[in-house]
Image (cartoon, rainbow, N blue to C red; front, side, top):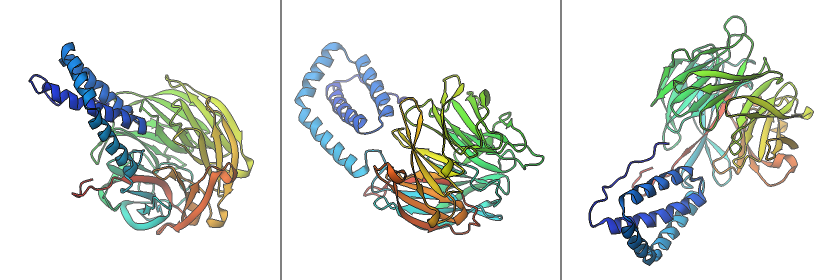
Length: 454
């Protein structure tokens, strides 16, 4: 993060009152850090404090503190309004009066489209809001459907999607009502059959599956400039024919990139150079049918993978240098073909989906990253398949893509350890899909103030 430069020149007689205001703001920031993630706020606050202390002599700071103590009532009043605002907007920073949307790709063998749903913050239910042509082609084949993850990615400004049938990418802007505008399309993916997108900052990598006969799979890099994508020369990492990469993703700080190769049964780890190029640091074999991968949001060195051919799940430890090792592996025969997973914000739980059994399995994650299977929840009666997973903005609901049934299913999370800790809420259709939908991405749109500003 780039810290802000000072917004004022501290030289005149108004310094006394100006810094008093700063101290009040500081108190508010401390409260904000308590209620929110606060990492960036802490860095900003530290920068402000260093700036003030470097400009103000000790006698002035002593007078300031005396003045500040006399203004505690103002500070407490400010804190009161801050807390009220947080209750209105939500402690996770997402506006309660804002909106959330979930997007998936219809991915038929023909013109592809993004299908949009609005999410009810209260009930978790989904309302279909529209379908938007990508300008590319889908591919309703068994080497694409339910064997990939992150076919749609959101960088906070634009929605990026794959078109496996035309070997290209499309870019959309997202409006306040969740509707989409196609910004660019027909961007070559750097290979054949793009299936997964990873984004960190202005860097993107795409996993291309190949053609299963002649054209090999690969990972290819791009720079993001607004909605434009520029290929990074020399970034393509060529894999093998029939390796079937399924997932590519960055770690939290973007220093490492991980990828899964389902048929090859391997997990790849790369160091990300400043140039955007990749340097391989590890290749872990013997991971039967590894498809979905997810980094633990709390234990940053922990990676989790779903093992389709075991079936079950594995936990991995990744060092700062990019070495990878297995923490533990869990066999889950009833799931039949574990494929995708999501991990809770506190890093203590994970849910794994399995298409053939149409089930969701709950795992607990201990402090060392080891997995324990808890229970499963069946959804076969609500539509075939169980693929990509995502939470709502407040992690009260869980959504699963039921590719083989043209359905999107909503579940409420509870504190129970039975039935994977979920309860069925709703199942909706996916228009335009041929039992072929791929990808699931949530986008949160901030609410507007009284002047219509977001």
